Image (cartoon, rainbow, N blue to C red; front, top):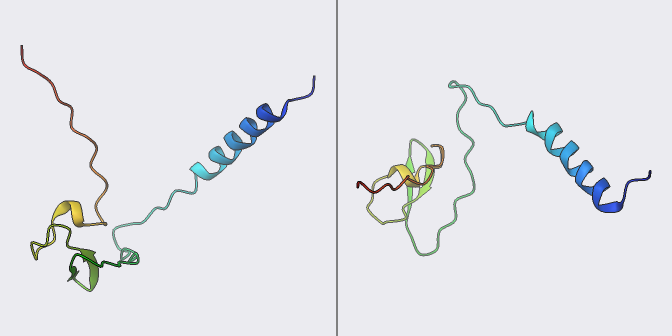
Amino acid sequence: MPMTRPVRLAASMLAISVALSGCAATRDATQAPTQPVIAARGKPVLTVSGLRFKDLNASGTLDAYEDWRLPPVRGHVISSAA
């Protein structure tokens, strides 16, 4: 039985995602981070160790959430005590 167009599309997307999953960027501790393009119009830009960061809260210091080298923080689980 021939595959329909949506089935072929889904199969192609699955194959591509499986193939690319092994292509995740890996970097060991000895490699310097790659500087992304930093452009800021309304906020200052900080330079720390030769790298540029947006100073989102204009504090003049690099906060953890402004540091693009750190992994993203997941949402916090909110639980209520009974």
